[in-house]
Image (cartoon, rainbow, N blue to C red; front, side, top):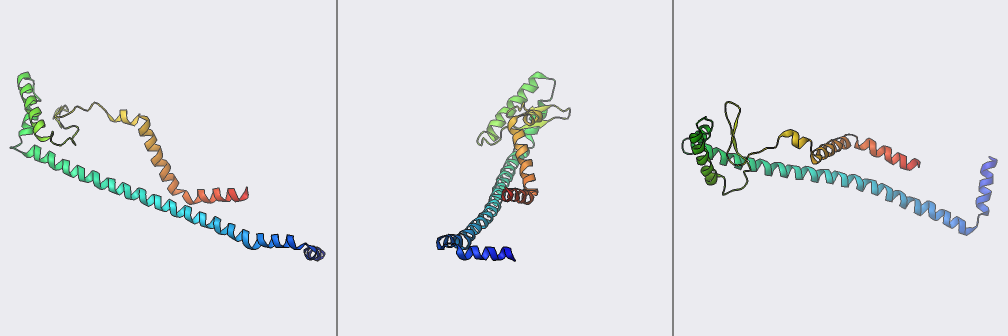
Length: 187
């Protein structure tokens, strides 16, 4: 009780200027600061949600474009293979022979068909036929790259790390933010 009485006596004897500034801080500055902090936290959440929505929308657009391109190219490849009573398949099968002259003639025919079917549109980078013995006959460009070459590159590794980091961030997002925010408040 004596403690409260001493505090009340000090408040009664406090100068008017000090009382004014104390009330200003307690009634105006602190609420404004609290509103500012809460607003920033809410805006932070909204920005994160909007950015995730934008990323998902861009991914969906990309998926739609790629699937449309695949459908168009599949239609073109199908029409090329089925045209003229499987002419392209016959020429490709003719390249899988031991006779060098027949192989060269069929290769020449494939090259002329390549110019007819694939050259007006440059979207097809490579086109090959897989033979029964496991060998390949390339119609346009030979692809010398294998999967290991791409998986060992730095950009591929970085892309994998970013994807994994994004998934982990989404899964533990709220706990991490709460921990960091609590850490800021304590310090």
